[in-house]
Image (tube, rainbow, N blue to C red; front, top):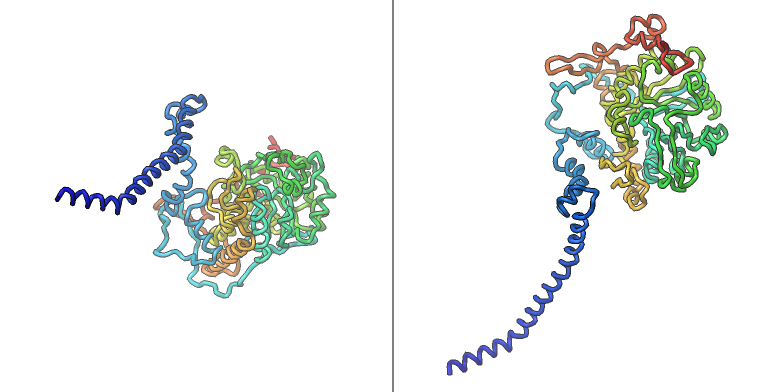
Length: 538
């Protein structure tokens, strides 16, 4: 009876729960089969890759460690991001550390840019430098300063802001980035340098002031064979939006190198801006074809000034051989033709990609280049006519103040304005894979950069940086930034000694190169300079 009851209860349990159990077992079986199917989807390609690795001949690691060696390549790609976000301290990144980038981001977004608990810099390190403040700050200093650019030979001078957008070409930067920069420049009343890639429709889209840079490729003003075309130049240069013209001799990233934009990247829009055929290699030779001597260069600058309707004409260069700088000074004095301004680009580099050897070992850093150019202009009596511009890692009011103390009349910034656009220093500028849409022609990547939104950040960063710059002038007790001298800037030689820059570097008196060149550190270079050649006189 008990067995029958047990059987009956078991059958009742089966009748009640059996179907559910069967469904559960079938479901589990199907799930196992489904996992097996998806597992095969992933494992079969990996197995095929491992087999390929084992038999291929190009990569030793792949051949010796099939499949596993690919982890190395993945880590190589992820290394910059892991280092930047997980490993580096606030002061360790290069070329701009996290603290520097954070300052630009905060000012561009209008966020708090103060820093708590004192400086993180080692004030006893030989890299430390500082500005001298006053016990009597000048709160009555003007709210804003501008600088008039144009020598006596210039009939249409330009009033420039003290912080402007440095040369960055359309093609290197995206269309959305160019539009955002130009709209920001228009909103903030400062200028936007085109870079050597010509004036694109994106530069014209919002009416911001333009400085047209003319490089050795003469993009936007060239003949079919690549020579300079005066008529095409005049047609664009006389436009109201173009305020100044800049002859590019070299850039800090790769001075004396030239460059090539491969035909595969020359789209219809880039071709239209540069005046080259679609799909053809876009070549910037190392040297200009319009001149080969200092005098010829000045004569061409005078021609550009006339063709533009009397607008200021200057040059941009990374300083190399001192005697060539002095040859230019002698040429200006002998011909009577003066440049309106000179932009000194530091060997610190910029947005342009370059061979590592050039980035690391060619060209004079901004500080030394700025001091040499300042001494050349002052020592030859030309500084009152020719304005001097500093371009190289400018991103803060303190950096601007130090450049002014070394002779600059205003500053240009490139990468700082890229940060204002949202650049995260991913170091992908050269391969069209910029993740923020700043330095790419990939439409899907550009989509993330909304010009109207980013233009506000561009204008805001410039405005807040100039505000910080003014606060430094106030703290130093000065009336204007041109009163800053090398004596206001100090730096350490070691942990126990420091001195002001006027005791570390030589700063010439007006006309000293003309009156007594032998009393200067440049006597040999001055004697070797000739107005009719860039070659060193023996």
